[in-house]
Image (cartoon, rainbow, N blue to C red; front, side, top):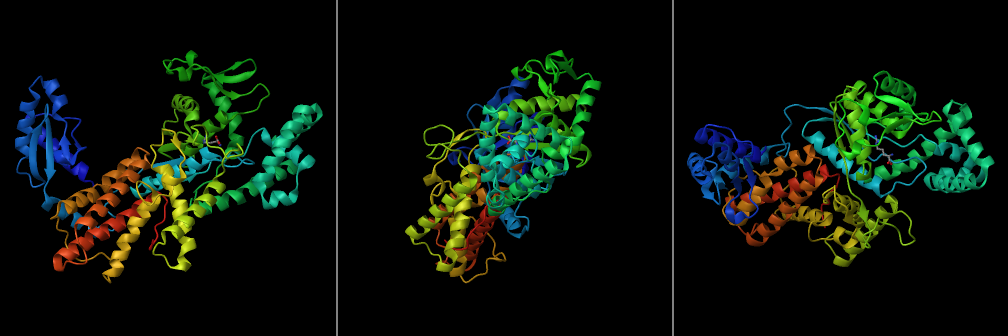
Length: 576
Ligand code: ARG
């Protein structure tokens, strides 16, 4: 169900009928409810094109819209806008349909695509840093959003599990490593060994040489070194799996960089054969400025894209070309998405340009995101100046949620408190990230994140719990919908009803534009409008049809918040 689309069609038809031509821009929700619910903004551009008086043209369109069952008021405003107020009966009909719709008003796309989405993708032997946290949370939400509108989505964890660090790790483990520590805290141990090994290689040329030869042995398939590498990867996987389980995040594929190893020589050969790459100082590079059909206007394309180093080693770039081939040929993907921080946008622009030249013509999107900043406005660090780990953030979130719950003396039975704190804490971290426009940096703020008021995860979980509590008090089952009809009488009911009906459009747009924050904003609006409605309209004190209508609105709120939070990867709680 998409009422924005439905109303756009009505308005588009009116423009066509009144002016004899179609308009690209049609309709948007108004900023200020005083001006109605929606505004037709499609007449202005047409007036320019037709060299007509915009207000006169708008009046003609308004005449066509007046009397349509969807609208209670149609008014020409400003230089040539038309403000529309939707008729309650039209809304009520759709709310009844929404109540009965098992898919919560989310419609399916006309053409389902197969989409591979690359997210989280941390590096072996290193802690997930803040960038990976954002990628994991955002990626998971985008997977869920695209899936719910009917796409076939394959979540792929493109682990950084190959590269020069493994020579240092193999030599380093021999010199400083503890097998026990590798079992109990693999990432910590590998990080510790890696640091020591890097330092030692700087001081002692013989050790650096040893590391290089271990790397060469690994790359040529030496069984002992391959086994060591596998052990590092497996040990890291165990601790990653713990984090993902805690977050409720899953992947359909775990194709790390190493999975593409065998394809790399072929990739470079193809680039050479097609005249896209050439040698320069022993390395193989794509020089965009030398290619006929490559974009040259952008600064992005000034530097070459290196696919093989002088010593023969392949790079992250080479792997990404192989990966794109694989996604087309193995997964038959229509779209390939990458949830990776903004600092890599240069890399992806170049990659996508090359894939286009290679004729591997999928739709590619780099889903970029900004950084998380500390209170000083610089990259988030611990008090000791170390990078903040995901694990420590989740631990602290749960502790803080628990403290808040105890402080507020919320309506939670003792045996549910720990579990509630877990859901509220993890949900707060996820929501705190997702509610931000992903492209901008944001400041990490515990108080805002754990807040029971305002646009925060706990506030939404609280709103949901209130709908449940209302049903408990009414002695009604929440699982099945109430069998009443919604009547929008009070203005607060109407506002809430209209907001609820926008869910389908929002889910669609949030998915297609990879912007989960649009869904956060919407859910916040639902919770806020519900709260206003609850204060203005008695629910349990009224009787009959009125009571049923209000309970139905409450039920719709609860179900929508639970579904919406679910699409963001956040759990709800029954009592709070
Ligand atoms: N491992 C990389 C990093 O930590 C991210 C990989 C993203 N995916 C990709 N196909 N390049 O920066």
